[in-house]
Image (tube, rainbow, N blue to C red; front, side):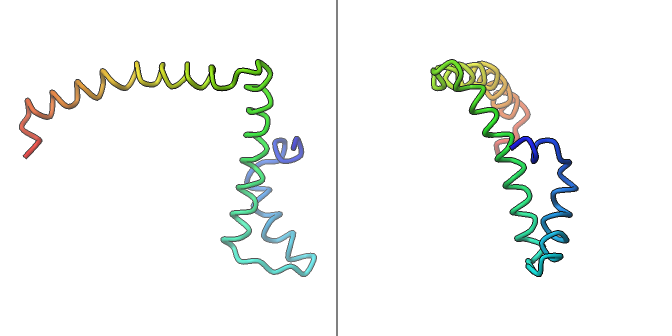
Length: 91
């Protein structure tokens, strides 16, 4: 996975499209882009999962992050709703 993490995304896109063509595998640009983006994202997500799982309590971490997100977003959402009513944007 470090191979995909250490390679720039643009290089992976070029390798997925032009590199496979060198081996006689013709793929559409969409398939090549999907393949490169999947490999690139998977490399980072597996590293994140391996690092979040070191505590052996991933759901506790996700619950804390969800709670912090709610604490940040709920007041902003309530404020925007009241501002919308105040400015008569609900019509």
